[in-house]
Image 1: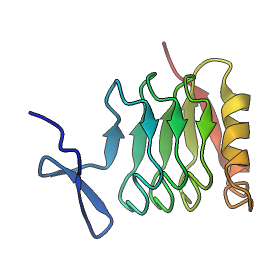
Image 2 (image 1 turned 45 degrees about the vertical axis):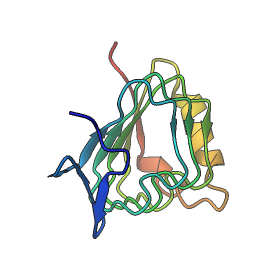
Image 3 (image 1 turned 180 degrees about the vertical axis):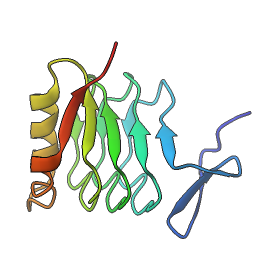
Image 4 (image 1 turned 30 degrees about the horizontal axis):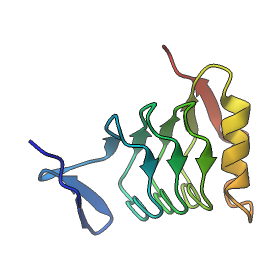
Length: 130
């Protein structure tokens, strides 16, 4: 079956094909996460992005309060403003081998007012297994 171009959203929940999604795997071939794409999806717990993703837009995951882990491939060259702002439970960021410092800097730079910097001391950057 085809993935709908506009998933359903209800009260901070994300539904795809009639099922609630809390662990999102972005399909291969997607090149960017649009601005505000998953903004305020309060029940989203994890996001895994494929190597085809190059950019994460402004406010893409803004205020996803239960987002605890995200996998960011080495293909990502830009993270928009406040992309992960308000993600209070985000403690695990999975990255490719040797990519932690680069991704950490992009994430810090995306938060111009330091919203997420208070989380960084407990944030773990773990290397993705190949």
